[in-house]
Image (cartoon, one colour):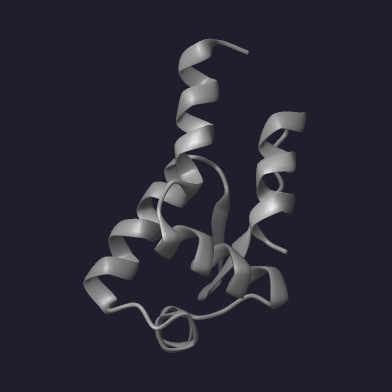
Amino acid sequence: MENEDLIKMATAFTHQRRIAIAKQLSQRACTFPELSLKAQISAPALYRHLGKLMDRNMVKMEKDRYLLKSPRNPFGRTLLEIVAR
């Protein structure tokens, strides 16, 4: 794994809102409105932070619900386990 990939993954959870999103999604998959309400994040901010998490392969969308995605490498999985507690 290259340094750039590690940095990108590490920055997935450098914002409290992205941590809040991961915690909510660790409980169950959510629609956008549900996630906005449960994580108490405005729609524009949620859209922005979900984009970053999806870009870093930590969140995916199936049908109309967002859910956590288990990264392929151990570093990413460990990060996700820590923040989803």
